[in-house]
Amino acid sequence: MLRLKSYVLDQWIDGEGEGETLFDPSTGEAVATTSTVGIDRAAMLRHGRDVGGPNLRALSFAERGALLKTLSGALHEAREALIEASMGNGGTPRGDAKFDIDGATGTLAYYASLGKKLGDRQFLVEGEGEQLTRGARFWGHHIKTPRRGVALHINAFNFPAWGLAEKAAVALLAGVPVVSKPGSATAVLAFRCMEVMVATGALPAGALQFLCGEPGDLLAHCEGQDVLAFTGSGSTGAKLRALDSVARAGVRVNVEADSLNATVLGSDVEVGSDTWHMFVQDTAREITQKTGQKCTATRRIFVPEAQLGAALEAIGEELGRVKFGRPGTDGVRMGPLATAAQKTSVEQGLGELVESGCAVAWQSKEGPAGEGVERGAFFPPTLLRCDAPHENARVHELEVFGPVSTLMAYSDAADASALVARGGGGLVASVYSDSREFVREVVLAIAPFSGRVLVGSKKVTGQAMGPGVVLPSSVHGGPGRAGGGEELGGLRGLDFYLQRSSVQGDRALLDKILS
Image (cartoon, rainbow, N blue to C red; front, side, top):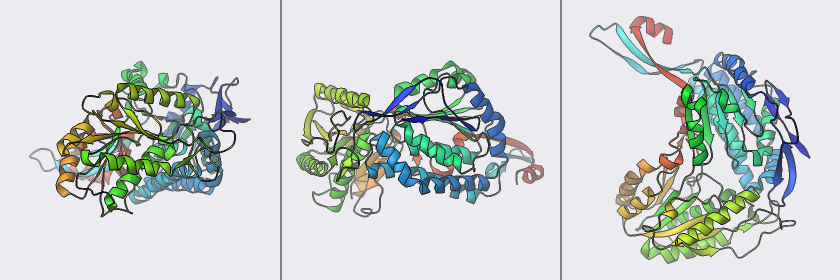
């Protein structure tokens, strides 16, 4: 059986004891073990601060970008082997595995190109500065310099490759060393990605470390220059923010948490139109891609009362085309949930929504395809219907993290916007309409509750990425229950890892030292 190790102090280290067991969720068979017992977490952070930080800060943005380009190319070359790792431990069909891995290589490549554009600088100057007093010589600039701590990345189980590479790309380009901790249940892919990146020899000593398994007392060793980026449940995010070591030291924290993402179909959209088909196809894909285990998956679908029946029929028909079962089986496009515990959570969540007044409107009647699936963590695509969205509070509170979404009706644009806002803040919302007035009213009303808003219309059919795709050039994060965080967004992503400082003095002197 495969034994996963951690990459600590620039060497691969195996923890003590048997540790955790990882499974193939399609069959329930054990595929790997990993342990972090005996690994010195404090030493990891010291090594990052004392060795990794100076090594990265000595490089220019262009040199850091070249490093990222090397990592991206190496992962792309290893793509087939990484796909196999994803299918065997994550239960992902080939398409979903590619979605994760290509997201990782694409984000690394994007930030590599950004580093090339930033050039030979090692810090950033914000704007052109300004005169601070009546005297023309007394001048002020805002500069951004790499923080002198470590970036601690606590990643979720659903995107082992993308989660690792996305966060690391931004931190490394900013000049901040990384300690990355993957979600344990699906860590085989993250481990394989780390193996590939280490083997390139491109990583400076201390730049990127990898803790594969239980975090232990990792966060107890945080200091004031460190930053913590977490992806996972809102309850865990709140606990991390409240840790004494984090709060007392003033550690900068970014949280990406639960999100009841919403889709709104405009009242102007006719059944059978291009915009209608875009809405149906995007919605069905967001229910089934990664078996609904995406932070950006659509959980609430709002349509005009007159279109409720047609929407239910069309989405159900589209879902019916998605064969689910063991990855590698002919025609399978949706795999199992990541773990047996995740399946139990989805079953319980669905039961709670039904008890609250929702009804199962469509659910696949087919069982999972493939051999040896009897013990697999499979759950069929499911569409719920809620006929009282204003009275049912639970449908706007509970995220079922699986292939489940709820269809609801609205009366007008203001009503649709109010229902979206009931989710308490989300990572992404989508609006499908060709009406300028409807789009304007809804987008401006839901933007304060959404980290990103996708507008689907006949002009962008065949061009727009779906709402579930996180692009490195656009901000990813969301207000309220979505964590209140913000990452990516091109150059904006670096801000989390850089310290903005106001520098004041003689203009001629500042121009020389900051040029």
